[in-house]
Image (cartoon, rainbow, N blue to C red; front, side, top):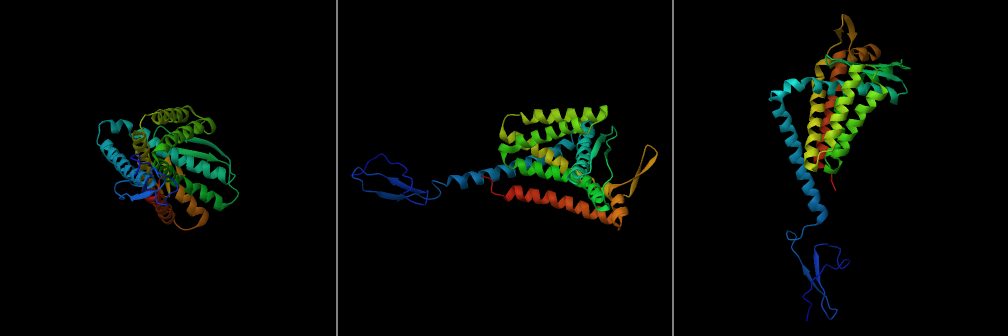
Length: 279
């Protein structure tokens, strides 16, 4: 006679789908349960997370496309441009610090442009890397946010990271009122977004801004293809123009190489986020 109290007995089988009913006379009868009735928990949740990521990223892309057609889009076009400018100049400064070249100032202009000021680099190659890092800034930040937000539990951390990066910019490299105002305002905005309740909502918000950074990176193609521009009546050499002067070649060549790398970074982040094992 067998007990009617059936239970899971760990260690009885290597297969977690094996169900054990314990008899009162210590004899054991093993019942195999169909896979579709009791799915493995890790595989089940991994598949669930992947499906949710696919849903959230397409919702984020759809939200961005819809946003572009809303009347408020024209009002927020400048702050979104400031996001791209900040990421660009931050790329210059982080590359400078990595190469032991002191970055002294980041400037965001009301027109949407910007500048990063640094000490002279020790060699032409370091100067070229610092110049190219600005064009990669938006794609790297967008890729990092996308990869982090693939795990819904880390979407808050992704938004917090952007918030603290803006605050750090204001404290370390902001030396004018306008740049400080932009950095503190956007830092506070992302901090508030990180406090949103609901993992799916936070993930969509984080991925929305990953899409914004990605679009800003791609829109940098025009700037990458010029050798100079005029600002306040002065001729300024572009980043790719500086690289061509330092390493040779043309600004179009270096613009194509760098923008191709930016697109590859974003594509790799998207593929990794969709296919990686999210546990």
